[in-house]
Length: 380
Image (tube, rainbow, N blue to C red; front, side, top):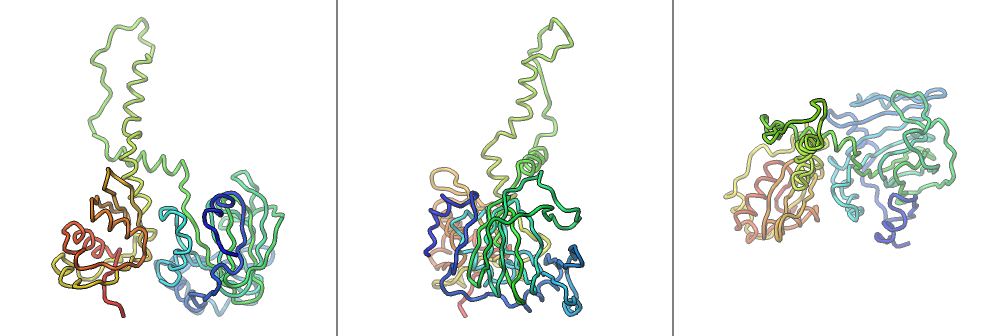
C-alpha cells in the first residue's frame, strides 16, 4: 500500500493504531546489533537493560561494561538505547519519513534489541509512537485505552499493566511499521533472536509541565519591584472586604505577563528546542569567523544539520521568523528568514557563495557552526 499522510492524520493520528506493511518498499537495517551494544557502553548515552527473571522483570541502567552482554544467561532480555538518532546519521535519516509531523513534536529514536521472547512487558505511553521493525521479527499485541487510573504492577522501574487483554495481534517483519496512539496498551515480544525495533517517539508536553516552566520563566523575567498599588483607594464600608476592584487589579498583576502570547512563543521555542542531552558539547574545537566562511564557500557546498540539534521557527511580522535551535533564538528577516525556513525543512541542503555574502545570513551560519548545530564542508 502507498502511505497517504493526509489520510493518516485524518483517520489514525491520535485516534487508532495502524499497521503498515513494507513501509519503504525496500528496507535496509541502518544499525547492527554490535553497534547498538557499543553505544550502550558509552558515557552520556541513556541505555537500559530489561531482564525477565522468574515471574518478574528487572531493569539495569547503563552505561554497561562490554562483558555484561556475555553474562546474561538463557532468560529473555532486551537492551534499549535512547536518542540513537543523535549519534548515528543513518538512524536519524529515518525521521525524514515522518516529517509530516512538525519538527517540534519529534522527540527521538529509541532502538531496542531483544533475544527470543524478550520484551519490556505490556504498557502504554503518553505520546504517539511509530514502531519500525528493523531486524528479525516481533509479535505486537494491541489492547484497550489506558489512563492514569489504569492499574499497574508494583514495579519501581517499569510501568507495566496489571491487566492486559489484547484485542489485535500482528507479527512484524523487517520494514513493517506499527503506529500506536497515546494511551493505547501494547506489548511487543521478540519472535526469534536478533530482534531490533526502532521507536520514533513524539513530544507531548503536559499542561502541568507548561504551566510550571512558563510561570517560572515569567517570575525570573519579572521586575523585582513591581508590586500591587492602589493610589485611587477610597473608604470602604467594611475593612474586611477584598473588593472586586482589588481582585481585578491583583489578578491582572499575575496574569498580565502570563498572557503575553508573543513572549510565550519566544519562551516555548527556546524551551522546546533545548538539547535532550545538554551535557554533550557538539561545538567544534576551533571557532569559525564570517571571513573564514566566505573564503571557504566559493561555490555550492553541502550543509548538514547535527542530528542531535532541534530546529523550529515561529513567524514574526510580514517577512520575518524567529529561528530556534538547541535553546537559542535568532531573529531573521528577508533572505535570512528564507534560509531559516530551509534549515528547518531540510536536514541536508546546499549553501552558495551568494548566500554567505549577505551579512545576516553569514552571521547566522557562523553562529550555528560554532554551536555545533550545523556543519558546512566539501562532499567526500
